Image 1 (cartoon, rainbow, N blue to C red):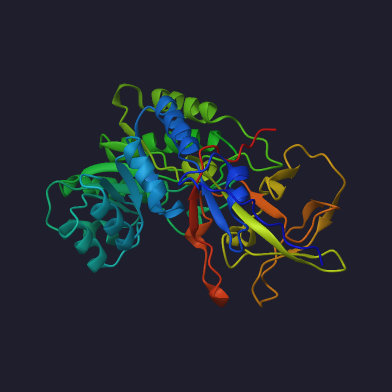
Image 2: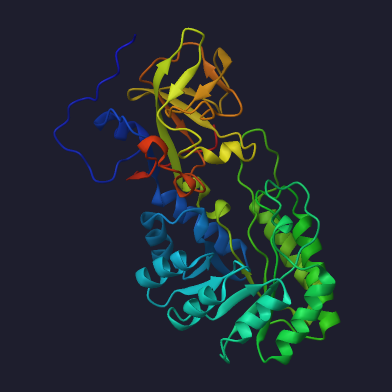
Length: 398
Protein backbone atom coordinates (compact mmCIF):
# COMPACT_ATOMS: atom_id res chain seq x y z
CA UNK A 1 0.00 0.00 0.00
CA UNK A 2 1.29 3.48 -0.84
CA UNK A 3 1.92 5.66 2.20
CA UNK A 4 -0.36 8.63 2.76
CA UNK A 5 1.27 11.98 1.85
CA UNK A 6 2.19 14.05 4.88
CA UNK A 7 1.70 17.80 5.23
CA UNK A 8 4.67 20.08 5.00
CA UNK A 9 5.61 21.43 8.44
CA UNK A 10 5.06 25.18 8.56
CA UNK A 11 5.28 27.59 11.44
CA UNK A 12 2.27 29.78 10.67
CA UNK A 13 -1.19 28.65 9.68
CA UNK A 14 -3.62 31.25 8.29
CA UNK A 15 -7.27 31.43 9.28
CA UNK A 16 -8.17 31.89 5.61
CA UNK A 17 -6.17 30.06 2.98
CA UNK A 18 -5.20 31.34 -0.46
CA UNK A 19 -6.51 28.27 -2.23
CA UNK A 20 -6.84 24.49 -2.13
CA UNK A 21 -3.11 24.01 -2.57
CA UNK A 22 -2.25 26.07 0.51
CA UNK A 23 -4.89 24.30 2.61
CA UNK A 24 -3.51 20.87 1.70
CA UNK A 25 -0.03 22.12 2.56
CA UNK A 26 -1.13 22.48 6.16
CA UNK A 27 -3.41 19.44 6.44
CA UNK A 28 -3.45 15.73 5.68
CA UNK A 29 -7.23 15.72 6.00
CA UNK A 30 -8.83 12.49 7.18
CA UNK A 31 -12.33 13.98 6.91
CA UNK A 32 -14.07 15.63 3.98
CA UNK A 33 -14.04 19.43 4.04
CA UNK A 34 -15.85 22.14 2.10
CA UNK A 35 -13.57 24.86 0.81
CA UNK A 36 -15.65 28.04 0.84
CA UNK A 37 -14.69 31.11 -1.21
CA UNK A 38 -16.43 34.34 -0.26
CA UNK A 39 -14.79 35.88 -3.34
CA UNK A 40 -16.63 33.44 -5.62
CA UNK A 41 -19.90 34.05 -3.81
CA UNK A 42 -19.60 37.84 -3.98
CA UNK A 43 -18.92 37.59 -7.72
CA UNK A 44 -22.13 35.62 -8.15
CA UNK A 45 -24.20 38.04 -6.04
CA UNK A 46 -22.84 40.93 -8.10
CA UNK A 47 -23.76 39.14 -11.30
CA UNK A 48 -27.35 38.48 -10.18
CA UNK A 49 -27.79 42.08 -8.99
CA UNK A 50 -26.46 43.41 -12.29
CA UNK A 51 -28.68 41.22 -14.46
CA UNK A 52 -31.93 40.80 -12.53
CA UNK A 53 -34.26 43.79 -12.42
CA UNK A 54 -35.93 42.99 -9.12
CA UNK A 55 -35.41 41.70 -5.58
CA UNK A 56 -32.88 38.91 -5.00
CA UNK A 57 -34.06 36.40 -2.38
CA UNK A 58 -31.81 33.49 -1.40
CA UNK A 59 -33.35 30.00 -1.10
CA UNK A 60 -31.95 28.97 2.28
CA UNK A 61 -32.60 25.26 1.71
CA UNK A 62 -29.70 25.15 -0.77
CA UNK A 63 -27.16 25.77 1.99
CA UNK A 64 -27.79 27.20 5.49
CA UNK A 65 -24.08 27.29 6.44
CA UNK A 66 -23.56 30.43 8.53
CA UNK A 67 -20.32 31.43 6.77
CA UNK A 68 -22.26 31.55 3.55
CA UNK A 69 -25.31 33.30 5.02
CA UNK A 70 -23.16 35.98 6.65
CA UNK A 71 -21.41 36.62 3.35
CA UNK A 72 -24.75 37.01 1.56
CA UNK A 73 -26.07 39.38 4.23
CA UNK A 74 -22.94 41.52 4.17
CA UNK A 75 -23.13 41.67 0.38
CA UNK A 76 -26.59 43.23 0.59
CA UNK A 77 -28.89 40.21 0.30
CA UNK A 78 -31.64 40.96 2.82
CA UNK A 79 -34.39 38.71 1.49
CA UNK A 80 -34.65 34.95 2.06
CA UNK A 81 -36.86 32.20 0.68
CA UNK A 82 -37.56 29.95 3.66
CA UNK A 83 -39.29 26.57 3.74
CA UNK A 84 -39.57 25.74 7.44
CA UNK A 85 -39.80 27.24 10.91
CA UNK A 86 -36.22 26.16 11.50
CA UNK A 87 -35.03 28.25 8.56
CA UNK A 88 -37.16 31.18 9.69
CA UNK A 89 -35.69 30.99 13.20
CA UNK A 90 -32.14 30.80 11.82
CA UNK A 91 -32.55 33.86 9.58
CA UNK A 92 -34.64 35.94 12.00
CA UNK A 93 -32.32 35.41 14.95
CA UNK A 94 -29.16 36.00 12.95
CA UNK A 95 -30.21 38.95 10.82
CA UNK A 96 -32.39 41.66 12.29
CA UNK A 97 -34.60 43.17 9.62
CA UNK A 98 -34.35 40.25 7.19
CA UNK A 99 -37.33 39.65 4.91
CA UNK A 100 -38.52 36.03 5.07
CA UNK A 101 -40.77 34.71 2.32
CA UNK A 102 -42.40 31.52 3.59
CA UNK A 103 -42.74 29.95 0.17
CA UNK A 104 -43.31 26.32 1.09
CA UNK A 105 -47.03 26.28 0.21
CA UNK A 106 -47.92 23.32 2.45
CA UNK A 107 -47.78 24.13 6.17
CA UNK A 108 -49.74 23.26 9.27
CA UNK A 109 -51.90 25.92 10.90
CA UNK A 110 -49.41 26.12 13.78
CA UNK A 111 -46.46 26.64 11.43
CA UNK A 112 -48.21 29.50 9.68
CA UNK A 113 -49.31 31.10 12.95
CA UNK A 114 -45.88 30.86 14.60
CA UNK A 115 -44.18 32.26 11.50
CA UNK A 116 -46.52 35.25 11.47
CA UNK A 117 -46.96 36.02 15.16
CA UNK A 118 -43.59 35.03 16.61
CA UNK A 119 -41.25 35.91 13.74
CA UNK A 120 -43.24 38.59 11.93
CA UNK A 121 -43.42 36.84 8.55
CA UNK A 122 -45.81 38.63 6.22
CA UNK A 123 -45.19 36.82 2.93
CA UNK A 124 -46.70 33.38 2.33
CA UNK A 125 -47.07 31.14 -0.71
CA UNK A 126 -50.24 29.06 -1.19
CA UNK A 127 -51.36 26.73 -3.95
CA UNK A 128 -54.93 25.88 -2.98
CA UNK A 129 -57.97 27.49 -1.37
CA UNK A 130 -57.29 25.79 1.97
CA UNK A 131 -53.89 27.44 2.13
CA UNK A 132 -55.42 30.82 1.39
CA UNK A 133 -58.00 30.42 4.15
CA UNK A 134 -55.19 29.40 6.51
CA UNK A 135 -53.34 32.66 5.87
CA UNK A 136 -56.55 34.67 6.04
CA UNK A 137 -57.24 33.20 9.48
CA UNK A 138 -54.16 35.00 10.81
CA UNK A 139 -56.31 38.13 10.95
CA UNK A 140 -53.53 40.36 9.61
CA UNK A 141 -54.02 43.27 7.24
CA UNK A 142 -50.48 43.54 5.86
CA UNK A 143 -50.04 40.08 4.37
CA UNK A 144 -48.71 39.28 0.91
CA UNK A 145 -49.98 35.98 -0.46
CA UNK A 146 -48.22 34.49 -3.48
CA UNK A 147 -50.37 32.00 -5.35
CA UNK A 148 -48.14 29.31 -6.78
CA UNK A 149 -49.14 27.95 -10.18
CA UNK A 150 -47.63 25.34 -12.43
CA UNK A 151 -47.17 24.40 -16.05
CA UNK A 152 -45.70 21.25 -17.54
CA UNK A 153 -41.94 21.14 -16.97
CA UNK A 154 -39.32 20.16 -19.51
CA UNK A 155 -35.53 19.89 -19.35
CA UNK A 156 -35.24 20.32 -15.58
CA UNK A 157 -33.51 18.19 -12.98
CA UNK A 158 -36.46 18.34 -10.57
CA UNK A 159 -40.11 18.87 -11.51
CA UNK A 160 -41.58 20.90 -8.65
CA UNK A 161 -44.96 20.86 -10.38
CA UNK A 162 -45.33 17.20 -9.42
CA UNK A 163 -45.76 18.31 -5.79
CA UNK A 164 -46.76 21.99 -5.73
CA UNK A 165 -48.83 24.44 -7.72
CA UNK A 166 -52.39 25.12 -8.86
CA UNK A 167 -53.22 24.97 -12.54
CA UNK A 168 -53.84 28.30 -14.25
CA UNK A 169 -57.62 28.17 -13.92
CA UNK A 170 -57.48 27.34 -10.21
CA UNK A 171 -54.84 30.01 -9.65
CA UNK A 172 -57.10 32.70 -11.11
CA UNK A 173 -59.90 31.74 -8.70
CA UNK A 174 -57.52 31.86 -5.72
CA UNK A 175 -56.09 35.23 -6.78
CA UNK A 176 -59.57 36.76 -7.01
CA UNK A 177 -60.51 35.36 -3.60
CA UNK A 178 -57.27 36.67 -2.07
CA UNK A 179 -58.08 40.14 -3.41
CA UNK A 180 -61.60 39.93 -1.97
CA UNK A 181 -60.05 39.05 1.42
CA UNK A 182 -57.97 42.23 1.31
CA UNK A 183 -54.56 40.62 0.75
CA UNK A 184 -51.73 41.82 -1.45
CA UNK A 185 -51.84 39.37 -4.35
CA UNK A 186 -48.74 38.00 -6.02
CA UNK A 187 -48.00 35.02 -8.24
CA UNK A 188 -45.08 32.63 -8.02
CA UNK A 189 -43.80 29.68 -10.03
CA UNK A 190 -40.76 27.44 -10.27
CA UNK A 191 -39.61 26.19 -13.68
CA UNK A 192 -37.70 23.26 -12.15
CA UNK A 193 -34.21 22.97 -10.72
CA UNK A 194 -31.36 23.19 -13.25
CA UNK A 195 -33.83 24.41 -15.89
CA UNK A 196 -32.07 24.05 -19.23
CA UNK A 197 -34.55 26.06 -21.30
CA UNK A 198 -34.98 29.80 -20.75
CA UNK A 199 -38.28 29.73 -22.66
CA UNK A 200 -39.84 27.96 -19.66
CA UNK A 201 -39.63 31.27 -17.79
CA UNK A 202 -41.26 33.00 -20.73
CA UNK A 203 -44.13 30.50 -20.78
CA UNK A 204 -44.74 30.93 -17.04
CA UNK A 205 -44.66 34.72 -17.27
CA UNK A 206 -47.18 34.63 -20.11
CA UNK A 207 -49.41 32.36 -18.00
CA UNK A 208 -49.06 34.69 -15.01
CA UNK A 209 -50.27 37.63 -17.10
CA UNK A 210 -53.26 35.59 -18.28
CA UNK A 211 -54.09 34.54 -14.69
CA UNK A 212 -53.94 38.17 -13.57
CA UNK A 213 -56.20 39.24 -16.42
CA UNK A 214 -58.72 36.45 -15.83
CA UNK A 215 -58.90 37.24 -12.12
CA UNK A 216 -59.17 40.96 -12.81
CA UNK A 217 -56.42 41.66 -10.30
CA UNK A 218 -53.27 43.72 -10.76
CA UNK A 219 -50.40 41.80 -9.18
CA UNK A 220 -48.36 43.18 -6.31
CA UNK A 221 -45.37 41.06 -7.31
CA UNK A 222 -44.27 38.22 -9.57
CA UNK A 223 -41.80 35.70 -8.17
CA UNK A 224 -40.02 33.98 -11.07
CA UNK A 225 -38.58 31.34 -8.76
CA UNK A 226 -35.16 29.76 -9.01
CA UNK A 227 -34.08 26.98 -11.31
CA UNK A 228 -31.26 28.90 -13.00
CA UNK A 229 -28.70 26.27 -14.00
CA UNK A 230 -25.03 25.76 -13.19
CA UNK A 231 -22.41 24.63 -15.74
CA UNK A 232 -21.96 21.02 -14.70
CA UNK A 233 -19.85 18.95 -17.06
CA UNK A 234 -21.51 17.67 -20.24
CA UNK A 235 -24.12 20.45 -20.22
CA UNK A 236 -24.87 23.08 -22.85
CA UNK A 237 -26.56 26.11 -21.36
CA UNK A 238 -27.44 29.66 -22.17
CA UNK A 239 -25.74 32.28 -20.02
CA UNK A 240 -27.37 33.75 -16.92
CA UNK A 241 -27.63 37.01 -18.83
CA UNK A 242 -29.68 35.30 -21.54
CA UNK A 243 -32.08 33.88 -18.92
CA UNK A 244 -32.53 37.30 -17.33
CA UNK A 245 -33.02 39.01 -20.68
CA UNK A 246 -35.70 36.46 -21.57
CA UNK A 247 -37.49 37.20 -18.28
CA UNK A 248 -37.27 40.96 -18.76
CA UNK A 249 -38.56 40.79 -22.34
CA UNK A 250 -41.43 38.47 -21.40
CA UNK A 251 -42.60 40.75 -18.59
CA UNK A 252 -42.57 43.74 -20.93
CA UNK A 253 -44.46 41.89 -23.66
CA UNK A 254 -47.11 40.19 -21.53
CA UNK A 255 -47.68 42.74 -18.74
CA UNK A 256 -46.87 46.00 -20.45
CA UNK A 257 -47.49 49.01 -18.22
CA UNK A 258 -49.08 46.78 -15.53
CA UNK A 259 -45.83 44.96 -14.87
CA UNK A 260 -45.53 43.86 -11.22
CA UNK A 261 -42.39 44.12 -9.14
CA UNK A 262 -40.13 41.11 -9.68
CA UNK A 263 -38.49 38.73 -7.23
CA UNK A 264 -36.32 35.68 -7.83
CA UNK A 265 -35.22 33.06 -5.33
CA UNK A 266 -32.10 31.25 -6.58
CA UNK A 267 -30.39 28.67 -4.44
CA UNK A 268 -28.12 26.45 -6.52
CA UNK A 269 -27.34 29.15 -9.08
CA UNK A 270 -26.41 31.71 -6.44
CA UNK A 271 -24.21 29.64 -4.12
CA UNK A 272 -23.22 26.54 -6.08
CA UNK A 273 -19.92 27.97 -7.31
CA UNK A 274 -18.70 29.20 -3.92
CA UNK A 275 -17.60 25.85 -2.44
CA UNK A 276 -15.85 22.65 -3.41
CA UNK A 277 -15.78 19.35 -1.54
CA UNK A 278 -12.31 18.02 -0.80
CA UNK A 279 -12.33 14.25 -0.33
CA UNK A 280 -9.50 11.76 0.06
CA UNK A 281 -8.89 8.35 -1.49
CA UNK A 282 -8.78 5.91 1.43
CA UNK A 283 -8.50 2.61 -0.44
CA UNK A 284 -7.98 1.26 -3.96
CA UNK A 285 -8.96 -2.35 -4.60
CA UNK A 286 -6.93 -4.64 -6.82
CA UNK A 287 -9.81 -4.51 -9.31
CA UNK A 288 -9.44 -0.71 -9.48
CA UNK A 289 -12.45 0.25 -7.35
CA UNK A 290 -11.83 3.45 -5.39
CA UNK A 291 -13.06 4.29 -1.89
CA UNK A 292 -13.18 7.92 -0.69
CA UNK A 293 -14.00 9.47 2.68
CA UNK A 294 -17.36 10.90 1.61
CA UNK A 295 -20.24 9.51 -0.39
CA UNK A 296 -23.96 9.48 -1.06
CA UNK A 297 -24.82 9.42 2.65
CA UNK A 298 -22.74 12.59 2.93
CA UNK A 299 -22.08 15.53 0.67
CA UNK A 300 -22.59 13.58 -2.55
CA UNK A 301 -26.17 12.52 -1.83
CA UNK A 302 -27.62 14.46 -4.75
CA UNK A 303 -25.69 12.21 -7.12
CA UNK A 304 -28.24 9.50 -6.30
CA UNK A 305 -31.17 11.74 -7.20
CA UNK A 306 -30.21 13.35 -10.49
CA UNK A 307 -27.40 13.08 -13.01
CA UNK A 308 -25.11 16.06 -12.46
CA UNK A 309 -21.55 15.53 -13.65
CA UNK A 310 -19.38 17.36 -11.14
CA UNK A 311 -16.08 18.81 -12.32
CA UNK A 312 -13.21 17.52 -10.20
CA UNK A 313 -9.50 17.88 -9.59
CA UNK A 314 -7.00 15.42 -8.15
CA UNK A 315 -4.24 16.55 -5.81
CA UNK A 316 -1.19 14.60 -4.69
CA UNK A 317 -0.14 16.60 -1.70
CA UNK A 318 0.15 20.18 -2.92
CA UNK A 319 0.59 19.13 -6.56
CA UNK A 320 -2.38 19.27 -8.93
CA UNK A 321 -2.11 16.08 -10.98
CA UNK A 322 -5.44 16.02 -12.85
CA UNK A 323 -8.28 18.36 -13.80
CA UNK A 324 -11.42 16.88 -15.38
CA UNK A 325 -12.17 20.19 -17.10
CA UNK A 326 -9.00 19.88 -19.15
CA UNK A 327 -9.82 16.26 -20.01
CA UNK A 328 -6.18 15.35 -20.50
CA UNK A 329 -4.47 12.16 -19.35
CA UNK A 330 -4.99 8.41 -19.49
CA UNK A 331 -8.19 7.69 -17.60
CA UNK A 332 -10.39 4.71 -16.83
CA UNK A 333 -14.08 4.72 -15.95
CA UNK A 334 -13.89 3.84 -12.25
CA UNK A 335 -16.43 2.73 -9.65
CA UNK A 336 -16.25 5.02 -6.62
CA UNK A 337 -17.57 4.03 -3.17
CA UNK A 338 -18.13 6.15 -0.09
CA UNK A 339 -16.79 5.23 3.37
CA UNK A 340 -19.86 3.68 5.02
CA UNK A 341 -20.59 -0.02 5.49
CA UNK A 342 -23.60 0.18 3.14
CA UNK A 343 -23.17 -1.13 -0.45
CA UNK A 344 -25.62 1.54 -1.60
CA UNK A 345 -22.93 4.10 -0.75
CA UNK A 346 -21.63 4.21 -4.30
CA UNK A 347 -21.66 6.96 -6.89
CA UNK A 348 -24.27 5.90 -9.44
CA UNK A 349 -22.05 6.87 -12.36
CA UNK A 350 -18.41 5.97 -12.81
CA UNK A 351 -15.73 8.66 -12.72
CA UNK A 352 -13.05 8.90 -15.37
CA UNK A 353 -10.03 8.74 -13.04
CA UNK A 354 -6.38 8.73 -14.14
CA UNK A 355 -4.60 5.37 -14.18
CA UNK A 356 -2.00 6.51 -11.67
CA UNK A 357 -4.36 7.60 -8.88
CA UNK A 358 -3.04 6.59 -5.45
CA UNK A 359 -4.33 6.07 -1.94
CA UNK A 360 -3.97 9.37 -0.14
CA UNK A 361 -4.68 11.47 -3.22
CA UNK A 362 -7.38 14.11 -2.86
CA UNK A 363 -10.39 14.35 -5.16
CA UNK A 364 -11.83 17.85 -5.07
CA UNK A 365 -15.36 18.15 -6.47
CA UNK A 366 -16.44 21.57 -7.74
CA UNK A 367 -19.88 23.24 -7.73
CA UNK A 368 -20.65 21.92 -4.24
CA UNK A 369 -21.90 25.12 -2.62
CA UNK A 370 -25.52 23.91 -2.90
CA UNK A 371 -27.10 20.65 -1.75
CA UNK A 372 -23.85 19.19 -0.41
CA UNK A 373 -23.56 19.64 3.34
CA UNK A 374 -27.22 20.73 3.44
CA UNK A 375 -28.43 17.22 2.57
CA UNK A 376 -25.69 15.16 4.24
CA UNK A 377 -26.59 12.55 6.86
CA UNK A 378 -24.49 11.21 9.74
CA UNK A 379 -24.88 7.56 8.86
CA UNK A 380 -22.17 5.41 10.51
CA UNK A 381 -21.20 8.62 12.34
CA UNK A 382 -19.37 9.91 9.27
CA UNK A 383 -19.68 13.68 8.97
CA UNK A 384 -19.68 15.94 5.92
CA UNK A 385 -20.07 19.42 7.37
CA UNK A 386 -16.74 21.14 8.04
CA UNK A 387 -16.14 24.43 6.21
CA UNK A 388 -12.76 26.03 5.55
CA UNK A 389 -12.33 29.51 4.08
CA UNK A 390 -10.22 29.98 0.95
CA UNK A 391 -9.78 33.08 -1.14
CA UNK A 392 -9.71 31.45 -4.54
CA UNK A 393 -12.40 28.87 -5.22
CA UNK A 394 -12.74 26.03 -7.72
CA UNK A 395 -12.86 27.41 -11.26
CA UNK A 396 -15.16 25.75 -13.79
CA UNK A 397 -12.99 27.02 -16.63
CA UNK A 398 -9.85 25.30 -17.87
